[in-house]
Image (tube, rainbow, N blue to C red):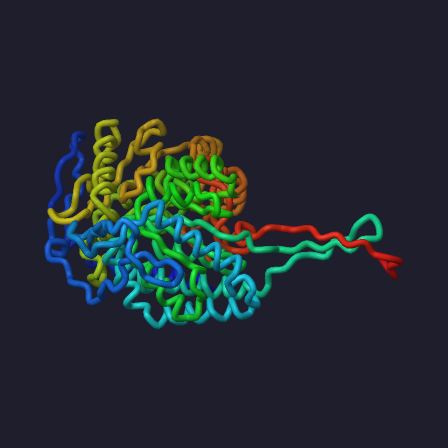
Amino acid sequence: MASRRISSLLSRSISSSSSSSSSLLLSKGRRGLNGRTIAKYSTASAVEDPITPSVKVNYNQLLINGQFVDSVSGKTFPTLDPRTGEVIAEVAEGDARDIDIAVSAARKAFDEGPWPKMTAYERSKIMLRFADLVEKHAEEVAALETWDNGKTYEQSLKIEIPMFVRLFRYYGGWADKIHGLTVPADGSYHVQTLHEPIGVAGQIIPWNFPLVMFAWKVGPALACGNTIVLKTAEQTPLSALLVAKLFHEAGLPEGVLNIVSGYGPTAGAALASHMEVDKLAFTGSTETGKVVLELASKSNLKPVTLELGGKSPFIVCEDADVDKAVEMAHFALFFNQGQCCCAGSRTFVHEKVHDEFVEKARNRAANRVVGDPFLGGIEQGPQVDAEQFKKILKYIKYGIEGGATLEAGGDRFGSKGYYVQPTVFSNVKDDMKIAEDEIFGPVQTILKYKDIDEVIRRANASRYGLAAGVFTQNINTANRLTRSLRVGSVWINCFDVFDAAVPFGGYKMSGHGREKGIYSLSNYLQVKAVVTPLENPAWL
C-alpha cells in the first residue's frame, strides 16, 4: 500500500509538471554537429532569485551521548545551499577524537544502558512515537532537507517524509517480533538459538537521500537493540541532527544514537577502523566502499554491509507502449536530479521502437521543469554541490567527444547554483564513458539492441549489478529477463518502488548485504546456539 501511494504521488508530480514547462524554459534550440536541433533551456529567473526558506538551522553541533556539543578541535565546515553556493550554516567538524568519544558513549549505552535491556515492546513504542513526531514536524524537516540537498520540496514532503515515517513504523513493528528457534537435535539435548544485538553499529550515510538512508540504517539497528554512531555526509549534515533531536524527545536514551558530522578521510575512516565498533554499514560510491571494507578488515574484522554504485539497465522491449515507456524511463533516470545509485542510466531500446522512443524521450527531457526546488511544479532542482555539478558537465563533454548524439540539454542551467539541463544522448555505444561509468546526474543514455539475447549479454556486461527496469507486455519476456539479469532488484513496468518491506542491495561491485525488509535485520543480529542436556526426557 505504501509503495502504491508513493508511486501515485510521483506520477501526479510528473504529469502535472510537464504540461506547463515548455513556455517557461525553452527557447528555439541550437544545432548539433550532425545538424540535429538540440533543445536549449533559457536562464529563467526561477533559479536566479531563490526563495528564502522559512526553516531555521537550530542544530549544527555533534550529537554525542544525548547532548549537542562542539567538536574537540573546535573546527567547523560550511554546508552550502546548492541553489546558490552560499553558506547555510557552519557545522561542527568531527574527526577521530570525536568518533572515539561517540563510540565510547555508544559502547557504554550498549553495555550498561537501558536500550538493549529494555523490553522489545518498549523499544517499539519509542520508535513509533518518533515516527509520529517526524510526521508532526514534516514541513520543517522537509524544508531543511530541500535547502541542504537541492531536491524538490514536493519530493521531500510528499514522498520522502512519508517513506521515512513508514520505515520507522515498520521497524518499530519488528522490534518485538525478533526471536530465535528451538532446534531438534540427534540426542537428549534441548537446543535453542538466540538472536542477539550485535553491539555498537557504525553507519555512514550518503548525501543523495539523507533522511531515507538514515531510516534504512538506523531503523533495523535500533529495532534489534543495538546502539549507533552515525556519520552524515559532509554535503548534507542538517536533517539528521534535527530528526535525532526528535528521537530523543520521543524517549530514546542517551548514547543510543550519536551523530558525527565530518569528512570521510577523517571521521569516516576513524569510524570504519575503530576497534570498538562491532558492525559497519556504508552507502556511497564503490571506490569509497572498497576503502571502508579494507579499513574494517584491517581493524577488528567487523562485518560490513555495503550499498554502492550502479549503472542500471532500463530495457524497453519491442512490444512496449512507447509513450508509457518513455515516461517511466525518464523517471527512472531523472528522479532526484539523477542522483540515484539505482538510476536507470543505460536505456536499452529495441530497434523496432528505437527511433520513436528517442524522439519522444528528447521531447520529454526538453519539457522537464527545472528551477528553485521550493517552487511548486518544479521537477528538477540543482545538483548537490560544485564537485558533482562539474563531474556531470565533464561526462556530458565525454559523451559529445566520444561520438554520441546529443539530443537535449548538454550544459548548465542558469548562471547561479548547480543546475544542469536535463540531457539525453542517443547512438551511445557500450564502451563509451557515459555508458560505463556512474554519472550520478540528469544524463540519459539511449542504446539500441536487436534481440533479447543481445540485451541480456550487454546489460550484464557491467561491473555493477544494483537494479534493472524492464518494460514489456509479455510475461514470458519479463520472466526471462528477471532471471537473467544479475542485479539485486528488477522492476517490471515500474521503477523505484521502495516499499519498507522490499529488500534492496546489489550484485558484483554494487555491494553486498540487503537493506530494508526482514533481510536487513540479520545485518544487526548475532545468532547464538545454546545446548542443554536433557535427563530422561519425555520426548525428543
